[in-house]
Length: 393
Ligand code: FES
Ligand SMILES: [Fe+2]
Image (cartoon, rainbow, N blue to C red; front, side, top):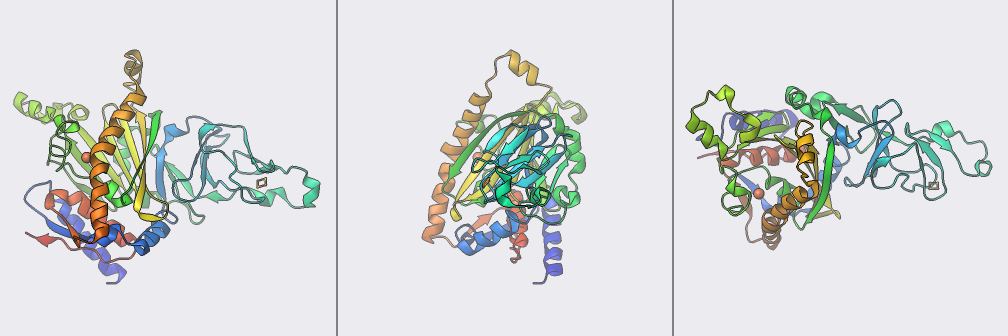
């Protein structure tokens, strides 16, 4: 199948899904279990997605003011993100031009400049090499030619984007694919960083994404936890090129129906969570309290291991009340993490093992799992593989 043919099929499939809101349209899709176990496929994904695709790293609030930094190694490339002296978002390879040590420490913070821990070469927040320790030993080399390697980056509607390898500028239209108005609507620029947590699981990175992208399972797997609040097996699905928006209503939806309020007056953020799949590796969840941004990465070059980096950005409109009531961000993180670890990830670790044992050749995605169908096909397309067809039922 050549590229234009694949695009046509992808268009057909995505249009097909777009018209289905967990209703009667659509069909089933079969995804081979080897998509989750094959080391060659993982190698293609690492090259295509975690080296050569612009990735959403977080929201603007992660770098709240000039001369703040955030260094992140999750893609496998050490990335140093900064807000320079003028407040402009920039990214560099976090690699010293002397002998390649990591220049900035991992994590977030604030610094006037970065001094390499190995031999103390010092770089500015604009990436320039400010000083070479004992410079006379290096003759007349030019500091100007030894700035940190700058990586393509962009700050789009409050989202921070970086491509882990050097090259062309980040393409906004490619990143957001029509979600510009949505992102502008949420005013993400104003959301302060609240907390972050890292969760590792013995399961493929795509399988971890899958757990967040359908609510068919919430009254079964999560019957005693979040399933008490969420409505199961009812979601919307709108496609924006590679990305998706899908909405999960909660139990208050029934109350709205009972009250027969005009839909325009429904307190939308209180009765639903709006989720986005941001190609290739992010799930973003927006509710009345803030934004949960989940980034998924393969771990240890293994198709069987992955890392989820979960960061919460709090809605600035509710932040004062949360503070007043002594709301604990850490407690929220640990409750959220417990459900993921004890319920979702416990389950997918078993699925991963079964996939490796080869007892089941493929998984079946129902028409109520249309979001997963889209995700698996755009990721297959992203590494030049054939799309899986939607079979009419
Ligand atoms: S490796 Fe950074 S100063 Fe030597
Ligand atoms: Fe779940």
